[in-house]
Amino acid sequence: MRGSLRLRISMLGALIAGVLGGASQAQSDPLPSWNDTVTKKTIVEFVQATTDNTKPTFVPPEKRIATFDQDGTLWVEHPMYSQVIYCLERVPALVAAKPKLKNVEPFKTVLTGNREAIAKLPLADLEKLLGATLSGMTVEQFQAEASEWIASARDPRWKRPYTELTYRPMKEVLTYLRDNGYKTYIVTGGGQDFVRVYSDATYGIPPEQVVGTAGATKYETGKDGKPFLLKEPKLLLNDNNAGKPEGIHLMIGRRPIIAFGNSTGDKEMLEYTDAGDGPRLSVLVLHDDSVREYAYGPANGLPNTKVGAFPQKLYDDAMKNGWPVISMKDDWKQIFTDEK
Image (tube, rainbow, N blue to C red; front, side, top):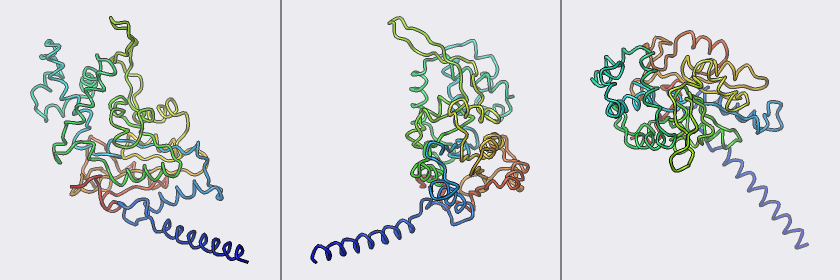
């Protein structure tokens, strides 16, 4: 009799705990920096649908791949991409080591410090600049130099490290996905080696889960007999536009289930994701908050831009394809991770 009573009490306790636990779980918000909008609901419901093994939309854990553009999707990209700023600031040291470059374009223009003139440099000159400042050193030397810059550099507007200007709502999405068995990747037009320097500490994404524009390396042996990799000014993968799905296939080997981007450079990645079988979610971030961050498009009448352009056609395509478009102004309660 006593045993039966203890069993009933135990069962009752378990039932109460289960109810309270379920209520607590139901009340918890995986995306607290988001307003309660349709966009947030779409993301949450998609994750629930793909991780519930009782539903036909269930996706096995090994296929739960989510890809994220970085610049403009995970952190600030205006007024200029952080890696471009890094390369511009590397020019004086490069010219000091190679004085003949002093009177050669585009190094000559960069040394003047004239931002308007630098902004007018043609793409070919920018590619020449990037090639020169991102090569000629060992992989380890580059990692050390980039790490030092990331630790000391400050954004000109907020006077804060670039790694503090990450979007809190997007970092919540990263955590939410990982908590539900998704593997998160950065797929960026930026330099793969550059982003790998800080991706783990900043986003919880390890270097091996960063796909980006990649340059060649050459195997060499030092005087001490130890091998090293030398970074060469040769492009292996331009991880932008169509290069993004190509890079995904090359580096990941699986088509994403979820993809986030913010510009024309991400369109092909979203299309590639959307074209797969089963449930798919492709999302774009629209910068429409000039007070808390920046406003640019030119979609929906926003100012035009050369950095992270989001034209009206991309917006119209998103509406046609059923891709949610995040409004920074309307969807996000808070923008930065540690807002001050």
